[in-house]
Length: 364
Image 1: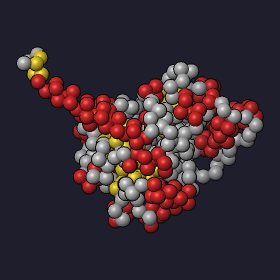
Image 2: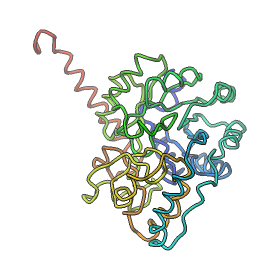
Image 3: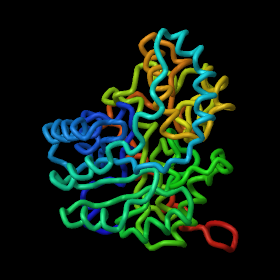
Image 4: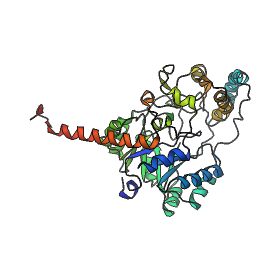
């Protein structure tokens, strides 16, 4: 990675931007202060809400940080399929004594307005999810001194990121919690994906961009593994979700290590786009029938998910989590960065010790 970008954060540790109220200023500040790169998630917020969080974060730290944006989504959903799903969810709304949301209340997430705010009030780093920004957008960010990072889940997507002029590609493996950042939601491949180590190696050979590896990383030894595979840094989400600074609901934090939730699964149940969550009742009952309709399904289920959280019912919540969720540690975010850095250093020492081995069959 370019020295100008890596100089922003001493440790190759990026805190993933987790939308929905998890990546709050307190979390981003703690990570940045400890030597990682903290991130705010602008997804599902208004432009003013994003701006207020940036102001709050700047009051907590003078260290660099990033802001994540969702790309506007094309109109590909079948309205009839959304109506059928809404009918299926009527019982959920009644159970939690709420109403279903309006599936047609917006699909661009205020992208243009948020981008205008970030050009008027530049931040060190902006990352993009669910697609590739135009070359004009990337150039405009560069003109105000902002680095642009863009997610990719395949080699072809990584090549598109490189063509955009972005400074780095975030290679997201299928292990990652939350939404898969595919550039286009293909219903035929929505439940498939490439593991992180294989993806990083493939992307490393396909593009010259620096790589930030994301997906299921919970330990410093795993950071060492992706660095050895060709990444320049690692992005961790679920690992920071359990920290006290995280804005996640307490039930969500507890569920990460609760033996009731034994595995994760990619599902469209909550948002209409493939996203990895802990398997609970809502996912089991509705996942098989959820249409490929984002953000329509997200808007539809939002009141139900909020009501379930208010009622203290984790079985009705979207419990986003990566495959390594059982390895979550309830450490303060800054301490977690330090522990990860120490584990990374120890892994590096262990790898150096293997240098004495030869292809001839062992150490000499």
